[in-house]
Amino acid sequence: MMEKLQKLVDRHRDCRQGPVRFRPSTWRPRLERYGAAHVLDVGVECASGRSGDRLISRGDLADLRDRVGDDPDGLRDLFVAVMIWGSGTTNGRGPRYTEAALADPRLRTVLRTTRQAVRSGDLSGAHRQFVLNGVGQSFFTKWFAAIDDRDTECDRALILDTRVFHSLNALEWFSWRAAGTRHWPTRYATYVGTMHEWASSVGVLADRLEWLFFHLNGHLDGPCPSASRAA
Image 1 (cartoon, rainbow, N blue to C red):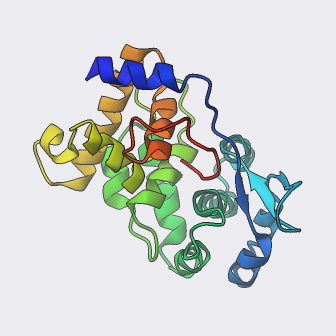
Image 2: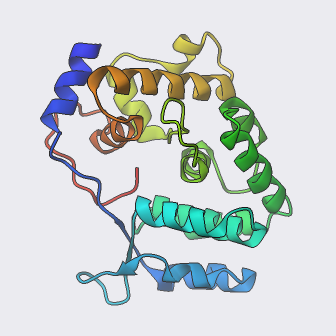
């Protein structure tokens, strides 16, 4: 396994994750009624493509996280930004699902309690507590990764979605087998711990390995991935 991972990392060493393009005009009607349309100003204007499109990066999410702190409205804004980043222009359901979450009366409590759980290192608990209309594991683990501002790199939250799963399975690694259970919160925590161990062994950070897995989407022998979507 380590030999395969090392070759994978070495082959894509010069590849970099880029920002994600999104279309504010698509999102605005879904956000305005909840007073969240100002989040569409995050990032920078896109120089190419459709007029009005913007670019949002993982760094933009980290900057917003640091600005909003514990403020409930700020956490909501960060959540919206995460959903935008995770959707880009390719996931047409993203705006609708985000609106469903904003309309869910559990929103503020879920964002606050899962943030606390992630920052305390209880990733299994965070996974168990995240229940919002329209938001599944592929997106709420993006939320976990965005809000985890702990200084230590050894167990920071990571994204787990279908594309990452495809790459894990291509490596013949299966979360249920590694965790010894079908219980998703336990499987997620096991995945995060395993990824950090692997990353340390091959000399990269775990979120770098996660990004490669996302973009390769199970095609481990593929070329350097393009950076057009979120990881």
